[in-house]
Length: 385
Image 1 (cartoon, rainbow, N blue to C red):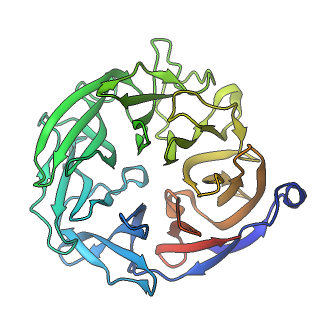
Image 2: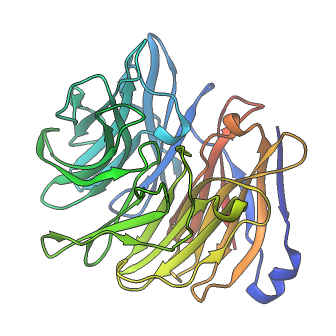
């Protein structure tokens, strides 16, 4: 695996400003680590979580990036049947000053069954015994989870359920989990969505915004959003009419980031036989969106992530086809007015080994995490401007 920090679109640098300069930065993830995910503490520090080998199997671990560097890695759960798919990354969040919550998906051996689990902690060190979130216990798929703090010492989890297997409809589900890890509410939000594409959620100044890949009776699989405002769910809204008709499930959807009512959303589409990543902004919590900005420059594989800086700049990461059979981890900044900056290549390697790259912005720092085929562990870098 080769690591690069070279702008691909130098001409854009003049129009946009200074090219982001990535700097590799060590992290506490161990050998064999995979499935990186970011979140932020309530006081604005980056949290990196991952799965890594441990005695008895694998362990879910995390660390916090403080002013003096990384904290020690802490273990949330170990010896579990973690589902090792890049799109099923576990997540660890500090949802309140004295409440941490983690979720992950476990698979059942010799079966297509997957189940959602959650664990909670008051101090980030001592975690509750894992409890299953999905009330349906049948051997079908429950997964592709996203999570957000939703107030009153609780978190909202959004996930998919396929009660009739892969060929049946996929339900978009919502569960509310309290500080003890108990499910206090479960509801079905949509009865038929693309059933193997990840969900995404953020909290805006108005409420919650959920993004997912929808599916029509004609197999059009574009990105839709739902808003939860003033105690009610909105009607589903199509973000952009790509018109991607596909009789399959691409395991590839949208990413969200927010600051107040400012929202950035990126997604993958293969419409018009042009595999690409696009993004939009919203200034009203996801009620309306700008025209799409084309982010990718070549044959995109997708797996996009997005972060939003204080000045309104969005940082988008994705995978794209490189030379030969290689894939590339790319990042691009898009200014608040929709001007796309130069593309920066972060790494190159096999698609599966690179995994699902993730970005986050905290303070003046934008972090990128990805899988390293050479070192067989998670790598991280900071984008400097």
